[in-house]
View 1: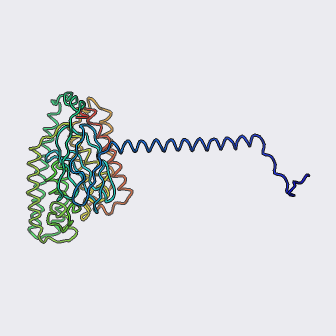
View 2: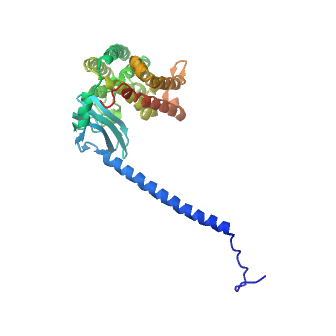
View 3: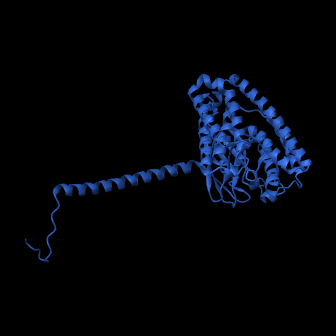
Length: 402
C-alpha cells in the first residue's frame, strides 16, 4: 500500500454516482431556497396590497384617529387598532342602526371589519360609550348605482319580513313579562328568586338579540358589559342586564337594584316599540343572525358574556332559536332556489343544537364555568360553521351586494 507524503492513508475517491447525488442535492437546496424566497416575497406583496386596501382606524383612550372617514361604496375593509388599555368595540351606525361592528378588540391588537357599504353618511363609535363619535362618508360608484337599479323584486320577502315582525313583537312581550317577574322578586327582597328569574329574562332577550343589536343606543343600555364603561362595574352609567347580573351573582345583594331593574324594564319596552317601528330590509334578515352566530363563535364562547352568572348556554340556545325562526321564514324561498344550501344550513343548525344540548342536565344547562376548553371549542366551531353557511343566503336569493 502506498503512503501519502503526510504518512496518512489517501481518502477513497467517491464513486461517480455518489458525486451526481451530492451535486443534485446542492441544486435542489438552491432551487428550494429560491422557491422559498419567491414565495416569501409574493406573500409579503400580498400582505402589503391587502394592508393598502384597508382603512386604518386607531382607537385611543378617549378618541379615534381619524374620526372622519371617506370611502367609496362597495366592499371596504377597516383595520381597527386598539391603542387604549382595555378591550373595546368599533361600530358603523346608520342613524340608530348598527351596520357592522367588531367587539372585544384586545389592547395592543387589531382586527379587521369588512363592510359592504351603500352610499351615504354613517356614524362610527370609538371604544368607550362615553367617547365622542366619528363620521363615515361613503361616496357612490358606478357599481353601486348599477346595483341599486338591479335590486330584485321585494314582493317575495313581504311575508317573511311581516312574520318576523310578529315574532319580534311576541318575544318582546315575553321579555317584558320575564323582567316583571324579576322586578317582583327584587321588590320582595328574595335573592334566590331573583337569581332564578334572571336566566329566563336573559333568554327572552337573546331570542331577539340579532334584531336588537341593530339599535345601538338601546342595545348598549340593555346589554353592554362593564368593559365599555370607564369605571367598569363602578361606573354610574353601567346599567342593564349585566348590572343586574353583577348584583345578583357577584355581590349577592339586592341593595339599590330596584331602580336598575325598573330602568331595564323601561328600556326593554322602548326596544320592543323600536323593533316594530324600524323596518328590516330583506338583505339584512339573514345578515343579522349570521353576525350573531359569528359573535358567539369568536367572542361569547369564551365565557365573557355572562361572567358573573355563567348562564351562557341559556343564551346560546336562545340565539339558535332566533336564528332557526329566520331560516324557517326564508325556507320556502331557499327551497326553490338554493336547496343544497338549505340542507347545509339545517345540518349546521343541528350540529350546534346538539353541542348545546349535550351540556344540558336534569336541572337545566350546565354553568359555563363547568364547560371545558374542548367543549367550548366545539361550540365555537359549530357556531362559526353555521355563520359561514348563513352568509350564503343573500347571494342565493339575489340580494348580494345590496
